[in-house]
Image (cartoon, rainbow, N blue to C red):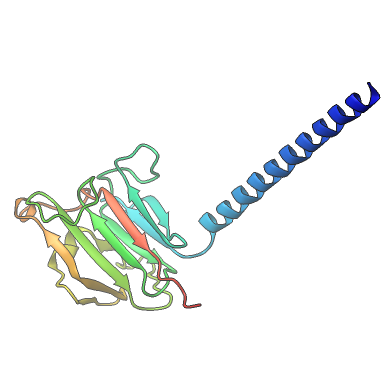
Amino acid sequence: MNLRKSLVLRTCAWITLISVSGLATVACAASEQDTTTNSSFGTIHFNNDKGEEKCSLAIPETNNWFNFSHDNQYCENNMVSTFWLENVPSATLINFYENDACSDAKVSNTFFFKFKTVKQPTDWAPHGGMLLSIDALRNLRPGELIAGKNLRVEADGAFVGPDLAAKNLNERLSCVYIERSQPAN
């Protein structure tokens, strides 16, 4: 009887130890993830037509899609008009999409713009006219370096569908893809 009781107590102790260890591992992983999310890889700030900051996106450690039409997103769908960059690493790819599908499809009622930062870090002051309008992006040519912004338009990086040719592109942004260039090991 004592042997059986001892075995049960030892088994319970091992289960408790393993459970606590597992919880500690989960807690450590969560802390690591929070640190990665909050780490300083830079930020894209978005403003509305009134110049009020509506939201911002942290540059991810590797890459991430931000689909504003999803309920779990911080930024609201079709609400931003201008943007500015804060401490974004060089060679970071930033794609803007009008469509909820976050697609490069050249459809008549969509747009997309693709950029890559060219300075370490790419940083604009949010005041003094340093904001860049989503609508102003329509005038960019593939390969063009945007003056004073340290952004280059990717080779296949600018498309505005014919249905949007005469319409303002502000407050139509639905999706952003960001890919941070990985340091060489």
